[in-house]
Amino acid sequence: MTQARLDAFQVIADPSRREILHLLSKNSLTINSLAENFEMSRPAVSKHIKVLYGAGFISIEDIGRERYCILKQDGFNELQQWINYFDNFWKSKLKKLENLLDEKAKKAKQ
Image (cartoon, rainbow, N blue to C red; front, side):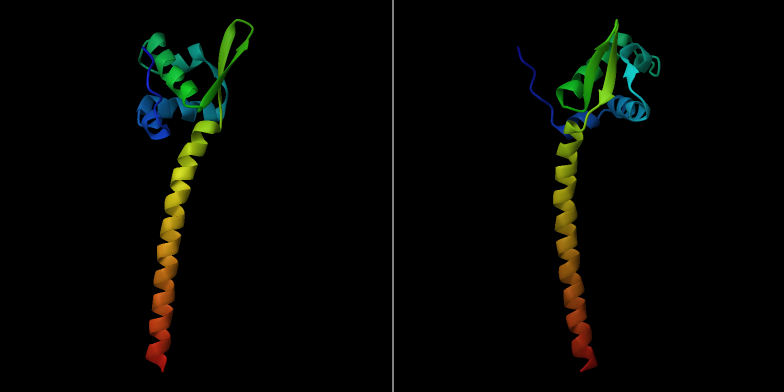
């Protein structure tokens, strides 16, 4: 049975996964190093890493006998596109409001 791919917001909804991303923003870490930061089993941390990997938030690089987790931009791009859409929406609304207020101010001066 295949698992449905989670969207970026479902992935970051979990506080543990957000903390993993935060930790990886400082340095690439092994899976064991990441697990030391949580009060959960290593297999539980591995499941979170699998989700982050599947959504494009991290890559995993084998160096010797260790597996290093490294931040990757792909998952963040999906978030950024969604945020940009609403940034543009609000900029447009505020620009319309600014134009309306400028027009009213001009009429009031006449």
